[in-house]
Length: 400
Ligand code: SF4
Image: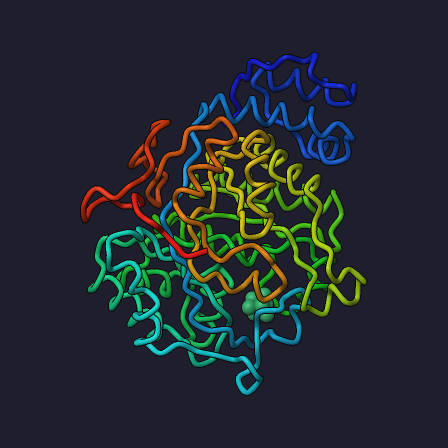
């Protein structure tokens, strides 16, 4: 909820930001109109300084990360032709199409067997052959072999897809998945909720109201989730704020969101990028930082704001630690989805590199679990060397 933030108004060069700064100082909630002002102001440092003050009031100098591993079990997707911003999906017989067997999933998960990984982040395409049994079998096998590893899996879009092909309700699918080992859900698949935008970039994909509906169902069942927004394609500033309002409203209702993650659109290797003539370009650092900062300021009821370094580069993520961000998508092994659309970042980051990135911003690194409970704070001289089998992130986490 809104907090009283001790903020120095003289940091604002844009007079339009002053009423927003005063609201922060009074602990008042920002409106969508305030959000539009924040997005339009040329005073990025002013916007960032307010987000930074708000973040520090919640989290001080601590920046968290999780030792996680991404697994993308299939890139086969029935919406291959209609999500024009996506370069990851393939039709079943198309070159590059893949669907993991259970053995392949387990092999990819093996890195966790040494006690390093604490979370699997499992998302993929809408494959007609990967129904409920595919995932319940996978989750049971993962939990049997690696019971300590948290399973964060399946976007709202995937849940709705499984429900449709199994002719089940969202709630029944979620209950079955939870019984098999699902712990939380990621926030992907939201894109931008505006119907006009979806008509242009993803006209057959689960709509905004249903995305919210699946998350509401999950929250009602006690399953915590994340939420996202894809920005930097054809959406307007007003579309962004309408999207954020829907997220904030659901959070007021359920309190089930753990974190908000704005996701930058990548225009390479997808139809939309060609149509927009933006091949080879990506979102700007300016827009990346602004989206994170506005997320921190407007979403006053979501505790954590995460920067996804795979998408915006480690350099922008480091800077974002002064623009309202308190959590980094930290150690992502073999990420495929954003690399399929031109992300040039490494596919994983070592623990020393991650510690150095956080410390370089003058912050204090801390490893967390999937519910954001801090497991280990890394002091200034802590190199993260392993201390036995239970060292968690205190070892090399991924190959770059
Ligand atoms: S964005 Fe998701 S639903 Fe759409 S084509 Fe890509 S994988 Fe399929």
